[in-house]
Amino acid sequence: MISKTILVGNVGSIDELKYTGSQMAILNFSVATSRYQKGKDKKTTWHNVVAFAKTAEAMAKYLEKGKQVYIEGEIDNQTWDKKDGSKGYKSVINANSIQLLGSKSDSGVDLQDRKMIASEVDMNIPF
Image (tube, one colour):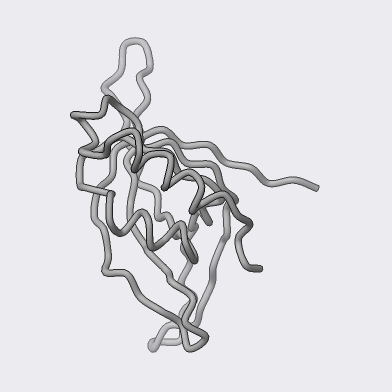
């Protein structure tokens, strides 16, 4: 079985970088993707994305609201019990790979930093 998701979109909100009890970095952020259908208005979908470990630390430095990104990951459908007794549902993209898109001037990241980011984040998600 395989679950793979690819997103190309623009960064929305970015949470603060957090660390688990075992000191693994976690970064949550949102990405907007849009699609066009003939004769209809543009439809924008917001996706919740989470990055882990070195990927999270690198992206915390370079992600900015509005910047375009390419993300490969897996869909994680989460459920929980709310205080009122009902169930909560949320789909999250667990990012395996994140690339900053656009020109050097668009991203604010020079070629040397892009190489560093690529080498830092070239690893598996820790689960």
